[in-house]
Length: 119
Image (cartoon, rainbow, N blue to C red):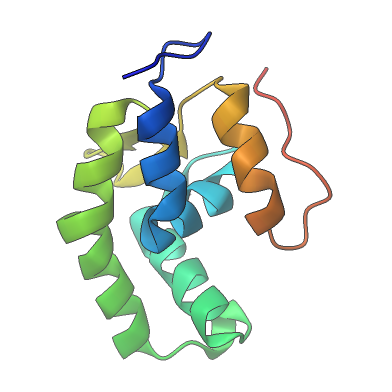
């Protein structure tokens, strides 16, 4: 396992970016300045997958993505430290300064010219 300058192993970065669901979560969070509620994140992911505006997403699709967040994506992402899940507020935020990960997410951002660096 080779660690990069920020400490996140290169194979972990590759694994997270290769996983379509994790990549979608990370790229959505990278395009935001603030945390997303789990429900808003699920709706955004469902809209992105369907290619429709968020207000046109069926509730069933949001529920499916919410379940995927709790059952697959958050359990994979939170132990790496790249996202922070606040169980009291039910929010998720990108929590990494690793520019290698951020630059790998750049091609997957929707409607954003660049990933804003963390303050």
